[in-house]
Image 1 (cartoon, one colour):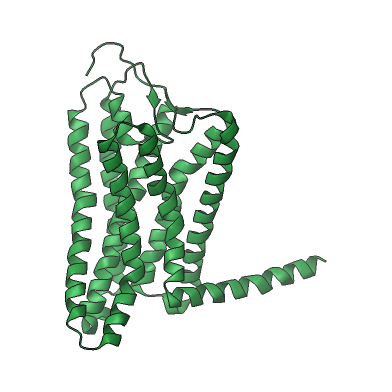
Image 2 (tube, rainbow, N blue to C red):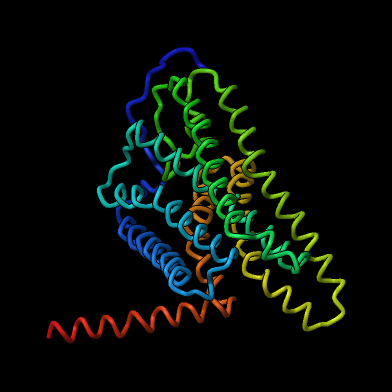
Length: 320
């Protein structure tokens, strides 16, 4: 690292969508629409699960937590991006950048751990159905969710606090639409060896181990399903895992795409597009995957909307 021209940063410049002014309006409308769809879709999932007693099961308990994590994950980056596009500003304060990094890592790790908990739930349901209610009891599910939140917060704190020791060069431009930790580390003039080791350790603990846990769970699930003699039984067993498996492929596929694109090309534009897929498109699609592929969820959403529509009609009629 360079030793000269060091400074304690007061602000960074986010250059991700600092494009020509004639497409700023299109970008603002596009990302605002995607953000509203993400928040609305995931909020409907949460309300449907909370209001319908038929969905008070471990799988849907974890799904409601996943929907909340997706709302927060997207809200960490998109509102600031929309503000910068609207005001034609690229500035984010040092404190704002650290906060964004912290919450981005928290909810990204939380997604990992919740998907792992959901995979374990499907493993117990299919491979040990007679012991399902004993193993996946309310207390154990609560501990899994609480542990996921605590591990995510601790891992993020570790990665974020180590940034405080760094000095930065005079070039404070981040070629991204949010404060991405690897991009921020590239701007540091002081030694980043400790930060790099912390990032690798946290990634191994909070990303690779959960991912391997998901793979192991589904290996056992597939092995158990293939042993079934009934074709109907096989289809029913696979259908219970279809939505979760789709979300797993989407989440890890886009996440892997971000880092492969960053490693394979020096083009910030390619990395930017991949990050949009990971941070905005994936949380937006999750509610559609669970509602379109899941009969219980579709029924719960219909019942929720059927209660909301008459209520709104009654309120408007009373006002008139």
